[in-house]
Figure (spheres, rainbow, N blue to C red):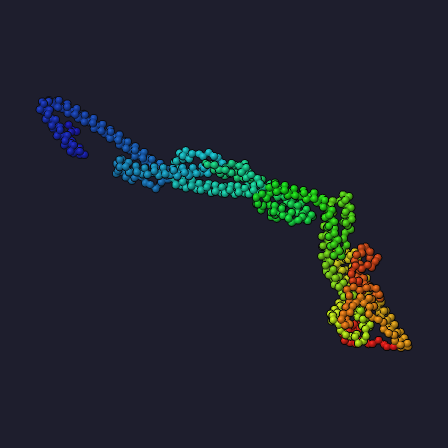
Length: 610
C-alpha cells in the first residue's frame, strides 16, 4: 500500500494512473463484497508482484549498466592501445574530462568515433608498414642473394604494437638506405657486366657463357626474375674481370713479342709496304698501352695465330736471304766508311762473312747485328769527326784553288812569252772571269798555312778527348798534315832554287846573245796546248782546261789526304792519287805574279834583243 501510496517523483503521471486503478480495483472489490482480509491479502500479493517486477527491472538495469561500463572500459582500453600503437599521445580521452557529468551511453557515444578513426588510421598505417616491409624484404633478399621473400604481414603481426610515425620514419630511412645500396650495387653490376662484355669482345670470348657462369640472371632476365646483385655475384664479376684482364695482358704481351719479331723481320728483309699493310691494321693498337685496348677482336687467338704464321713464314724466308742481307749491310757499312774516310772493321769483311755463313760457324743474325752495331758506331764517330772533316774539305778546296792558280799562271806566262808584242795585251772573251777567280784563289792560298796549323791543333784536341788517333783512310791525319807541311816547305825550297837557276840561265843567255846575236823565238802554235793543257779563249786570253798533265812538273807534289785515299795499312808504300785532278801545290813566284798582272794593263819588260 505504501508503494502505491507514495508517487514517484520521476513518474508523476504514472503514479496518478496507478492510484486511479487502485481506487477502481478497491471499488470493484467492494462491489463484489470482498472482505477486508481478502482485500489486504490481494493487495499484499499485488505489492509482492510489483516488487518482483521492480527487482527484475533493477537487475536488468544493473546488468545493462555493467555491460555499458565494460564497453566503455574496453573502448578506453582499445583507444589507449591504438594511441600507443600509433604513437598518438596528443589525443585526450573525453571520458576523463566528462566522466563526472556524462552518462555511460554518452561516454560510449563519445569514444566510439575516436576508436573508429584510430582503427582506420591503424589500417592505413599497417598498409604503409606492409608496403615498406615488403620492399625492405625484397631488397634484402636481392642483396643477400636469397630468392625467398618473407611475408611482411606475418612480420607485422608480431610488431603491430609499434605503428608510430617514429617507427615508420625508421623503416622509411632503412628502405631508402637499402634502395641506395641497391642502386650502387646495380650500377656496379652494370659496370662490371659492360667491362666483361668489352673484354670478351677484345679476346673473342662468349659473353653470355662468361656472365652465366657468374649468375644466370646477368645474361637473360626472364619474367619475374631479377638481376642478382648479391655479394657473391659482385665477387664473381670481379674475379671474372680479373681473369679476363690477366688473359688480355698475356695475349697482349704474346702478340707484342710476335709483332716485335715481325717488325724486325720486315726491317731486315725490306718487306714491301703492300705486304706490311695486311697486318699493320691488326697490330696497330700495340702503340697504346694494354689497358686501353678495347677494339673488338683485337686480341683473339686467330689474330695471334695469323701474326705468328706470318713470322714463321718470314723466318723461313729469312734463312735463305740472310746472307744477302749481311752482304748488303756490309756494303752499306763500307760505303759509309768511304764517305766518312773511316776504316771499316775487317772482322766482318765480305769474304770473311760469306765464308763464316757458308761454314755455319756463326749465326747470320748475330753477324748482322754485329754489322748494325758497327754502322751505328761509324755514324756516331762520323758525327764527332764532322767539324774536322769540314775543315779538311775547306783545306782541300783551298789546295785545289792553289793548284788551279799555279796552272793558270804557268799557262799565262808560257802563252804571253810566245806571242808577238802587238797582240800580247789584247783582252779576250772570259778573261775577266779568270782574273776574278785568280784574285780569290790568291786570298785562299794565303790562308792555307793557318788552316793546316788550326787543323792540326783541332785534331790533336780530338785525339786527347777521344783517347784514340784520328785516322783518315787508315792514316793518321796529323802525320798527313805534318808531311804536307814538310812537303810544302821542300817545294818552296825547290822553287827558290829553280828561280835562282832560271836567273842564272837568263844571265848566260843574255851574255851569249850580246856576243852572238839573238835567235828567232820558237813556234808557239801547238806546243803550248800540248805541254800545258790550256787553250786560248778569244784574242789572247787563256783558260785552264779541267785536267792537266803532271809530266814536266819541276817540283814534287804536295801530299794531302787525297794522296793517301785508297791505301790501307801502307803509309809510304806508294803515292797513288785517287783524285781526278792531280794536286800540285806550288807557291806562286814573284816574277810569275808580275807576268800574270801584266794582263791587266801593265806592260812587262821586253826580253833582251841580241
